[in-house]
Length: 160
Image (cartoon, rainbow, N blue to C red; front, side):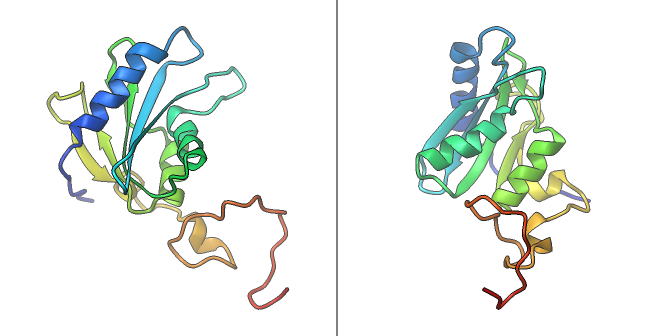
C-alpha cells in the first residue's frame, strides 16, 4: 500500500517538542502530543503513564481538544521526552484516531526536522483497517463515534 505524504506542519512538531521538554518529567509523563484543529488552533497534551495502562498522549489529546470545544482535528504528532523525537502512535491510538478523525494526518518519522519526517493519512497507518462507525447500526458509515456514552444496548434503525 502506498501512503501519500503531505507537507509537514513544523510548528506542530515544535509545539509537541516544547511540551515534551517542559512538561514531561519522570516516569508518569514521557510523551507529548500536539494537534492542529481545522480552525488553526493547536492543542497539546501529555500521556498519563500508570502500570494499569494509563492513556497515551494522543488519547489524552482527544479529550483535551473536546474540553476546549475542538472536535475537528487536521494533523497530530507525538514526541518523546529526553529528545527522543517523533514517535508514531501505537495501535490503540491509531485505531482511536481513525475512529474519531477519519481524515486526520499523522506526522511520523525521525527526529523533529530530520530525515524521513512526513505527514500521512491515519488510515494509511492501519492497512485493512477496522472502521468502528461502519459497524454501528445507528451510525453513518465513516463517521466518528457519538460523544455520549453508550448504554450497551443496540436499537434498530427507526426504533425508539
